[in-house]
Every structure is written in structure tokens, then in C-alpha cells.
Length: 330
Image (cartoon, rainbow, N blue to C red; front, side):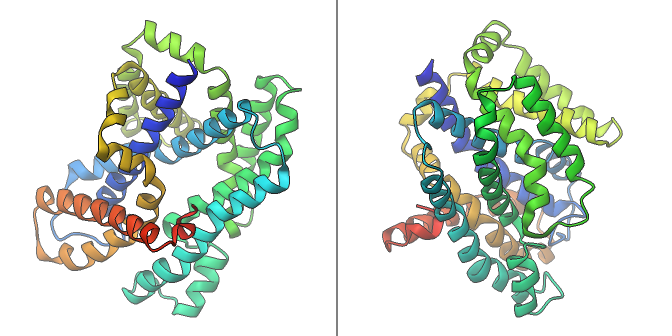
């Protein structure tokens, strides 16, 4: 079962950044996009909203599951070393990409009204508008929080821990501040904890899905209810869990293991974080130049996904070849 667990996590690490890449490209066809293409696409607008229903909670669930998996293997015993490792893994990429890539693109292409210095202060250092990097900083704070709640996990019942964590999620929405992504961290710590317990009780999930193979695909269909049900915190959590269950369930029930023997998918697993870090600004630049041309979405969308995906992987490899892997947290 441990082997099956690690394989599921590895495959999720392969596909999650691709899911985010698809979502970031599709969101350009919604009012929330940084650049509005001359030719719209209702289908891509729907696709974006569907992916955004669950993809970021799924990131935190996977991070929590991997954290729990490492704890079961006897790692992360020294708090200081753990915190230093997470700072190196997350804060160095946050600052490098924020200062050297996100700020120049966002300011240089006029995606903000701030000048460069003000954007650095407000957008990056205070993280009021750090674009996709918000996740990196929020995840760091969640790991900081994990040092505090880890001793409680072995003493308190899971329902009590999750209930308290859910209370923090609800309360975080009413905080009067949003600097340093602390509010986001307080919100998403619940999903991180869900991931920890998912890892802890993974054999039960595995057995349940193997007996009821239709459930993940039913969740795929039920997730379309997000276009019908009114928006609320409750319905949002409902969509989140449908998407999380769908992702884990489909990977568990489908024969995905052979993918790890394919070189391209091994590359995705290895460079997933680099793909996440690089691709949004590449999308901004590409759409900035191509969106006004009136290209059909059936050309612009796949071209942007392929170019930005391959470009991100190539840039990740280039950093590693230049002995600068520390800039992507390695």
C-alpha cells in the first residue's frame, strides 16, 4: 500500500501543474484574465471556472499528504532544520521570481498601475498582488503553522482537529488584513490538514474507491453543479471536496502507474515546481502580443499551453544546468 500511495502522490505532482497551466490559460477568456483575447470562448470560460473550483485546495491537500507521508517515515523531527528547509524551498523562489520575473513583467507590460518600486513593496514584499506566487508564500506559512499543530495530531481525535481547523478557515474570511498571504494560509491550512489525514487513512480510501470505481467519475459530473448552485462558503467547500476526491479517485482507479516509466512524465514530476513558477508570466507575455490578433481560441489556447509549458520546463532545466537550482527551491 505504501508503494501505491507514493505512486498516487507522484502522478498528482505530474498533473497538477498542467491543470494549473490549463486553468491560467483558460482564465484569459474570462473577465478575471490579465489580457482579454479579441475572440472569446464560452467553452474555455467554463473550463476555467471548473478547474478553479478545486485546483488550489488540491495543491494544499497534496502538500499535507506528502508532509504526513514524510512524518510516517520518521522525517521532520527537528523543527529548526525543517523550517530552514522550507524557507529555502519556498522563500528563495518567492523572492527571486517576485523581484526578477513577476515585477518586471507586471510593471513593464502595464498589468498594474504601480511603478516598479511601489509594486515591489506592495505587490511582492507585502504580497498584496504577488500573482501566482501567493501560493508559494501561503504554503510557507502553512508549514510554519504545522510546527505548532503537529503535537496535537497524535493527541486529539481527527474530527476535533479538523473541526477546529475548519473554524479557523471560516474566521479567516473576516480578518481585516491580507498582507504576507497570512489570510490565505489560515484559510488553506484546513486543506493541508485534510491531506495529512488522507495520507494517514489512505488504505481505507484506496479500498473504498477500488470497490466503487464509478464514484470519482460521478464526482466529475457533480462538480458541474458549481454552475447551478448559488455561491457560498458551504457550496465552495462542496466543490473543493468533489474536485479533490475526483482527482485522487481517478488516479487510484485508472492504470496510471506506467506513466512514470515515460521520460516526459518523469520530467514533469521532477520539474513540476519550476513549471508552476515560470508559466504564468510567459502566458502574460504571449497573450499580450497574440490576444489582439483575433486568433481563434482553438489555435491561441493550445499554442499558448504548449509554448508556455515547454518554455517553463526548458527554463527550469536551464537554471539547473547553470547550477542555480536553489532559485527553484532545490
